[in-house]
Image (cartoon, rainbow, N blue to C red):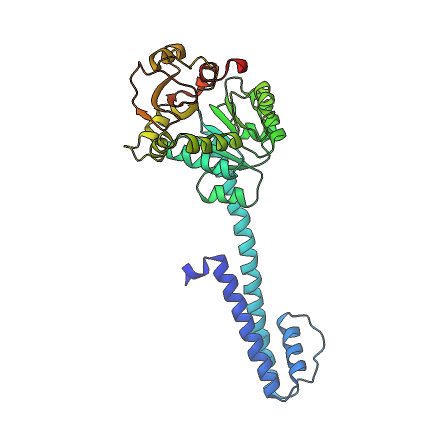
Length: 350
């Protein structure tokens, strides 16, 4: 019984049922005594809610007095129980929220070297899932609503607030964080968050999302170390599948972790794998794989090659020359972008 009464929702449900039963029985009792249904129901409501208006009909028989006394006792008891259950539910919810926020803030204050995720949309959710799989500590910043609740329900450390507010970033422990990822769909907000984060922590690694290609330079100027353009990445990925099907299929296996969980191992080592095209007029045309890796000075290694005629080289030897339009699968560290651009992009783009 005590266990049943300890749950506010159960108490509220029990109180509602009890009051409805009392009202129904009381109404039936007055009707049984000869009252019209409307008068009987009105009398029950006045009595149960203890309003104290005059009786709609005289209570002048022992039966009516017995019904009224029973209704007063049972109805008032039921209403007190129902009111108490409602107060218990509201109070418990408020205490749970207050203590939950405080407990979460204490857990965040203990973090150091963590990642701050600004926004819990589709990209934020995928990023949080990957960080959790990699056993990396992180904090999610979300303004509120269903996304904040979803993040909390998944067990993520979550702060409700606007990431453009410096005070919110401080509460997330930005001074102790190692990285920040701002993945909001609003470029202006991402630029502002990047500026604020860089001013609060000069050593912070900042990865920013951009929707419009022209925003990339603004984010870099604001202090972002890396800029991710989901639209461009999606287009490049589709180009891989259309132009270099064999290599793309190999990368699918690696990304899915089917080849001895190689994709996960690469991420743990801080490495990434991608396909780049050798453009006309680039330094890669005519150069051998060994020469290109020498030009890259260790920034990346070439692990696969596919010609335009779909001839595929897995683990290509160093003496294979790169031809125009070849799809080259490379493995390297995140900072390899400039080396890749300098070697595989047309000379006019350098």
